[in-house]
Length: 516
Ligand code: AHR
Image (cartoon, rainbow, N blue to C red; front, side, top):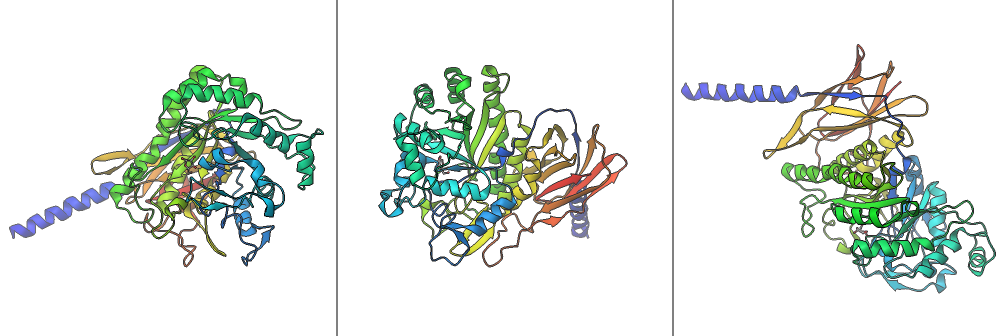
């Protein structure tokens, strides 16, 4: 009898706990008071000569039975055009600082071969070079962002590459471009001066790099219709001193932006990063803690930049971000091939919300690395193709590109695991040119739906619709055998209640709402 009473007591306490948990609520306030635009370039991508990103990803064998232009795979191009990728960064990454552009022009049979020392020691045949990259960008209708070689290249080499790309004067190098099939200048404007110069790009000190930047940038010339937007190789993660020195030592007129690289490592340890598909709730939670560190990084680097540049003329450009896990078992570890789960989608939604909310300073970013490498939008295996959960997030969020940023305040419940807490919900909002409001919300809690009541200040609306991305487990993935396991669905969990918007976010979900 005593035992029965105790059992009842436990059952009751459990139900009370669950009831409290299941009735989680929060509030969000969105205001119309801003004159900041969310730069579309925040939704940029990165493609390095690494594993099957370029070779076997964008650029495939002539014999592969898929639609192609030259050797560029067109189903990949169509998928990326649908989500409106605004820019593509190339050729690296670490590869950029050992890439010599002359190796990648002219007749393919005569192009030199090199060893890709950073990524798997494979032979690089240079069949994908400058013209092929720019053809890809033109098919994608996106802006090229070229990372120039500072680590092992000369000032002259970089200067001549820019002349080759952008000049319309009479010079030998311009004639060479015409001979190689492109008489018109390409007008490339986004220009990276090195990559990770604190590491694989030359192991420099910030003082030395700032001096190098000034040298290289001085000879990186503007040509008609192609004023260069020069991007300095910025800090690694929380190296605030790097930002301080670059902002102090490089004149602002020389620098369009300063880059920041930060990867979410599930375990937080580079040696054993954690699996892409098999992880506990505890590891999922820690991954999200590491993902949310982006908020702190962007805030603190921006604060340093504000000291030197209060008018925010220099952009913070997060041109490498995403989750970096252990490679898929059985694949070449130097190829960085990893699967992509619902967890990746939650990371993408959260990170893009952070960038949107810092759009006064963050003007550009690049997910690493688009296809078959790290946190990809697309995975391919010979002719097979699958769109990842991360792809669907970029699809949902494309409505924020070049829209007016709407400031947002959140008062939301915590998600607690192992006695540690994070905010369960994050969000961002914007208003597009047609006046439509878009709100993107992420519920990181894998157990509990959360009901959010939203007050919209000075914003008139009458109808709400939306899309949602979720799945039964955070470890779920899209595979070649089951490519639509995680897909976008219409969202019916939002309604108008008086002048308030009430939304019930499913557990572990990403929702984008449209208010008309
Ligand atoms: O994205 C993979 C590598 O990560 C890049 O080549 C490098 O810039 C960074 O360390």
